[in-house]
Length: 146
Image (cartoon, one colour):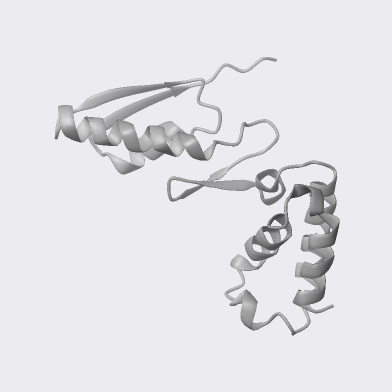
């Protein structure tokens, strides 16, 4: 099947998830293959990518979020591994990271600061802060129920 055919099928199957979900899935699956997706839409899609795309569609039809299907989510310019065991960081949380960095620059420039990320989940907040500001010592803690 051609890329365009699979995208059309995906849009039809994922209508209730919004018309962007199928395109996002296709784009992310093809991202690691160094292709400009929109330039090859009329070409046949390699079978391994077709299989991955159709499996992803099936998982999303069952209600699984795109981030879990892909196994990662973008956050503050970094990709974080996620699974059903981890909450997907919300886009608004990126604003928290930006606010902390801005307040640090305003009130504690070039000082060593200790940051505690409690209930860290995916670790996106703590890790992003540590990567963005070398003067932060970040401790991240999550409790696991066994």
